[in-house]
Image (cartoon, rainbow, N blue to C red; front, side):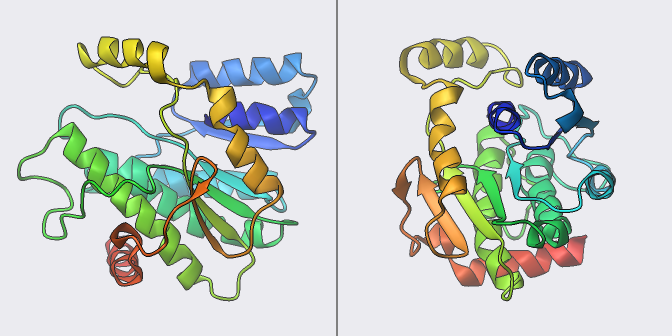
Amino acid sequence: MGRGLALHHLRAGDRVTVVGSDPGRGQRFLDDAARLGAASRAAFVQADLTSVAANRRVIDEIGARHDALDGLVLAALRHFPRRTETPDGFEATFALYYVSRFLLSHGLTDLLERGDSPTIVSICGVGITKGRLHWDDLTLKDGYSGLKAMLQAGRATDLLGVAYAAAHPGGRTRFLLHHPGFTDSGTGSLTQPTRTIVKLLARLLAQPVERSIEPIIELMADPPPGRLLAYDRRTPVDPSLPTLDPEAARRLYELTRHLL
């Protein structure tokens, strides 16, 4: 979905920097940009976003390329079937899905505040209430499963959006939590037999990326009032859900700042 949004904005005449870990996919994006006649407006930064140092390098490189940002799209996500701990001490799903988004959103705020109508888009599972924060075991050393890790990181990412607006009370940047629904966006990080099952389900039930990104494009172009926006496709998510609790968001924000 990140690639789909990047190409949309290149077609619209914008400058776009894409961040990813796979140099082959990065080159394919640059090749697509060249075919669109937008090579001079496209850049790719290779980085492993499970790393705190890599995220900070990305912030520096984006700052060197852009004087201002109108949008930041946070879409990186990967399934880890076995527990993996990063050199920074985070469980890898938590590091990629939550910590990276924390670092990039707060770290790029100065550039966003210089934009015309800045919006951070976090593609996530907002509106889903399954899963929770394991406050006493955020690294999931006890009873790890890929699903447990994904649900915890998803709930943390919901709270990131709530905490962001509170952390920048005088800011202009909106934070959009967006649940795109079941999208046929690839199964590269899944293992068998899950990969085959998801491919079959996607063929039957999933919507294509082009359709999934349409509500995001609309909300970025003509956002409703408010600093925090939460949508399941085109439907607003109830802000009183316990997964969007301001006190839990504040607690996680303070804990993350301490850990970093």
